[in-house]
Image 1 (tube, rainbow, N blue to C red):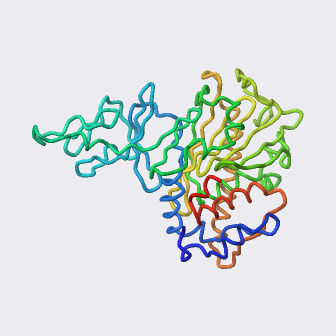
Image 2 (cartoon, rainbow, N blue to C red):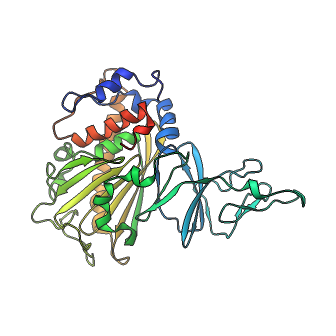
Length: 372
């Protein structure tokens, strides 16, 4: 449970009130470094966090909340370990460093582990030293439709329970068969939760997204959640539009995704940090990495059925839309820092925001409530 000194319990009560009378999270949830530190340890390290697509090289290190994780991706299996040598605690790889070696080697004293985490070499430890108890600490990891998720602290609910019904939205697009044809990384001057909240509503779309409103209907579709730690829904394309691009048409060589609704775009967010936007001809993801209470790294990837497809038509559309959103959430971040701010109400069309912030509020009180 988060300390009442960080988040007022009465403010969380207001968030959890019935939809129509509830309020948003208090400003401290978005502006206080100590709240973010709690979230890193509990929402990120303590649940299932997305690391992105399966790494191209055999070993890669990631920061997952307040824990450093080493992922080993063999052709037939992915494993994750605490990124800590069992000898003196040196990192086996620096965060975001990757190598393509057949052994895991600590650069400090040369202790080496096989790709299964067993200690294989311990220089100068003597012939009687028993290496068996000194293997790497293994962590739960899951390859889900080509995205890697890790539970860095251990002890989270099984992944299938965590993901719950989001599978029915994502599985028809078979993302594991798609290829990443473009990647953009943005540094957004806003709290990670504001980026997710903005994603989960289109109440703002007529005000700041003229291009988006030319190809889709902002108040169309349905929102929903659970069981599982996710929030999402759908939106409908306008009659003239075949996809979300600046003119509503796919680019040359784009291949429609088989077996999916050609008139619908799916938007789902798997807590805490993966947003999946599934279109009739491509899948876009936003992966959120909190850098500070008021700063977030957003990694966007565009996935297509054909590796040769030029992604520019989708990238140009969403890059423009993203930048409109980043300006909006940065303004919200500044407003939340004002002494005059008070948590506001939700509009009738913001049910997905309600699902998101109530998931957060329940998690602040009891991490076991995620998933629900």
